[in-house]
Amino acid sequence: MKPDSQQLLFSKGAALARPGNGRRESLTFKANRNLGRHGWLRLTPAYSRHLVERLTEPLTSNDRVLDPFCGTGTTALTCAEHGIYCDTVDVNPFLIWLANVKLATYSPSDIHAATIFGEKLNPTTGSGTEWRPPIKDIQKWWSEDDLSSLAHILTTIKHADVSESARNLLFSAFCRTAIETAAVSFGHQSMSFKTQVVQPTLAALDYSMSLKNLFVKRLAEIVNAAQVPVRSGLAEAVLGDSRKLDSLPNAKYSYVITSPPYPNRMSYIRELRPYMYWLGFLHDGRQAGELDWKAIGGTWGCATSNLMRWQPDNTANIPGSGFAAMIARISDHSRILSLYVHKYFEDCVLHFRALSRVLTEGAQVHYIVGNSRFYDVMVPTEQIYHDIMINNGFHHVTVENIRKRSSKKELFEFVVSGTFGSTNLMPGTAKAAAAARGSGEMLRGIHSLPCGAGDRGDNQLRNAHAASNDKGF
Ligand SMILES: C[S@@+](CC[C@H](N)C(=O)[O-])C[C@H]1O[C@@H](n2cnc3c(N)ncnc32)[C@H](O)[C@@H]1O
Image (cartoon, rainbow, N blue to C red):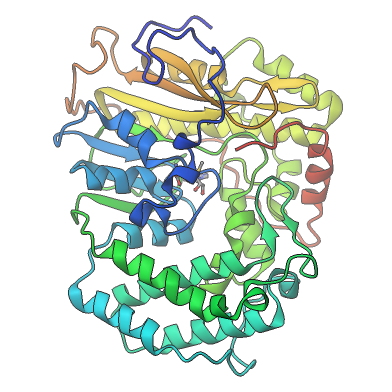
């Protein structure tokens, strides 16, 4: 790869792909925990407000930012906080709900109603007969007492006589409480349950930190942050597929800041499903698999068995002479993992084709991506993104290594940056030129495979993945 020259953002003058200086948690979700609305709900692969602030430094209120992989809405919220327009897209309806709740304006009466709800919440644990979500082995997630309290709080929220905005604040505090009391660790791909005997629940540990008290504490924090206004109307999250980008408002974007999924077999459904079941975004495992099949890199349930039937689209044209050899080497170990990596990058090509239809001439893009390793085969995600961008109308494409992702010495996170459009426009000189590009091209290769009965593919992929080395975020 021969990158063009462009000023690097995080370590001026650093050599291309020189390893980052360490884990740099200031760039990850961990840095958001105490930052008001940014800390409302964690998503392990989220990046930090700090990182978005670094990348938005050159922007003015004339710019329009797109984040095609919204996640928890870090880009959109940071932009709104800094007076910059931003639209953001995600395939997951729960994340769209969450991002819009973080971006909303709350009136004094919403704040009052949410506060009063916390003060009046009945301390009893509930009758035990309230609705519980159909999460498989739910008793592994929560003790019977905590489940009963959660079900009671949720039912009370649903029946409360409050505005929709106030109810959303209550649901956010509920989600925080549910995840903090779950006996589950999301630290790596293979989610593990903590042993409840060794690690008693919060309620059993200390009455003063009973689940209800924890809910009231989290609600107070959320209500506090909701009182700090965000300029409404500047940022919006919309449900959609970034391989099409057909659900966006009719606008062109001068800037992209985003972090797509990495090819590391991580399923967002895995971490999000407790919230999604409790709040009614998911009703059964089949639905979870179908949603994950729409996500780039999804592997949950039937997403994996669909993958086994998936055929590459030869017109997608993934550039780079080493790509086919890399896929063949992974296939020597595991055909399903090779299909997984192949489809991941084919979806990236579809995304960049769709993106090229909504960018202004001279638009700047920044993609935060992570590399992976399967068996002894490195997947140089950053180089493949570089090549896909060059192939899809970008120039001045650079790759900067910004941090280590895990204790594994070869796993890093990079910013891949580029400028869209004709090469005589230097980066940053063609803001909001709004040049209309081609009228659109039919998407090829997004296959709509139904979920089959008895999906067992995820186990195959999970077993195959045990041989991979990618446990970092
Ligand atoms: C790494 S996360 C983004 C994290 C985000 N930067 C944050 O700070 O929270 C990637 C996101 O891409 C979404 N995604 C995956 N496939 C998608 C698709 N085809 N279209 C839109 N979003 C998709 C996932 O649901 C996930 O929320």
